[in-house]
Image (cartoon, rainbow, N blue to C red; front, side):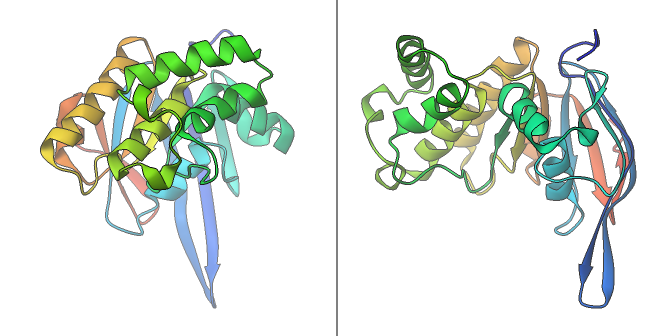
Length: 231
């Protein structure tokens, strides 16, 4: 990486197209976007507008068909898959709408997984995971598998796993969707803590609570094109 501030994002002419039968769907159609390090950006748009595709491109889970994706000054879209995987593990956290926890692993083991993949020593892994479980209020549920946890508890485990390596960028897909006001406030308080230590936050949401909780900038995505919503 260059000397650019950690978490700085630049998209230049990003396009991602799909075939559906005999039709071409332009999920992203020449997106230009700049997000500064430590900034909070919420992305709104109707179903099918391209929000998930944009998050997947930002999370290096999908390759664009055209354009450049600069993370801290380096074109990460052009990296090999192994190199992208390394960036994905160490610099980007992703909180999925469906959590994507490993069903056979406990909460402790799910959070620990990124540390294992990075070769962190067992004693240090235990220290970090126990601290993370305490921070999310689930120390007593450490050895429960996902099917033994509530939906809210599973989401907190997913957030802890996504942030255990202290990524520069945190992406979240509808983190407060279908949740009551108290729960949504607790989730956004967690994100506020990450923002306060300089994490760049990009959240796709329909929830006005998520948009107003941290301030920041709101973007609107529709038909693969993006625009800024006036404050």
